[in-house]
Image (cartoon, rainbow, N blue to C red):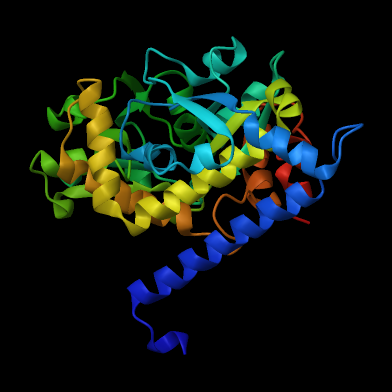
Length: 350
């Protein structure tokens, strides 16, 4: 029967299944909540319905389609329906997501799983709420005319790598592959690559790669190394909070996660509406808002989010261990945090 379905029909079936699983999961968790002492179950439910929990969400980067699921969850009232009042803050390079969590300026953010694991060794441990990107979106790209045709050709080349925590996993990849290169810290544009000041650059499939194409370079001109095609298909962005916030607000964290996933499903099913809302927010903050680029981003992210056999938002133990193995190998972390402590919803899903 499935063989006879079109790709779009199959996608709709998958989206329906994922939505149903999320709602069942949320209902099951609420059914296990005990009423407050001295109150009946109905009294507790009435109190929950009339109490709004405020959550501050900080995108890890500037407003763009990378966060369309949050925008749509807010716009369609999915947070409000679960008793949440969500403030979507302004992110970007001048608003570190990890620092904002540690310093108490935000409650939930989006981080690479590499960063979430690393910062668990700090004074304020973090908790992982959901795995958003089920594939690794990192790539290295350069011009073939620079003498690039294989991984071996990367040795000795000048590679642009993002500064700070954003480029750390790229450095780990190069180190693990024993590729001796000259690293150049780059900002968030692709100008150095376009001007031939560097041989290769670190890019994301959903963002900078498309910017290179929009600048006039043809894919046939490019030497492209997608991490996930050479044994480094490690998961990436996820929803993260502090252990303190999670322990004080477990149900709100669960509700925020479920509503956000519902927002992503809506965005993928209604891309034009999601793009309208994304561009509205970008223009509100006076950010360059190119609809064609944001449409590319949303389509690529759709593939990153939906590609998991257990459903969207799931962090599998195997994916967690793969990231920890690489980080331990290169002594980025000393000892991995227990999987179920790091990702408490794993216990709920048993």
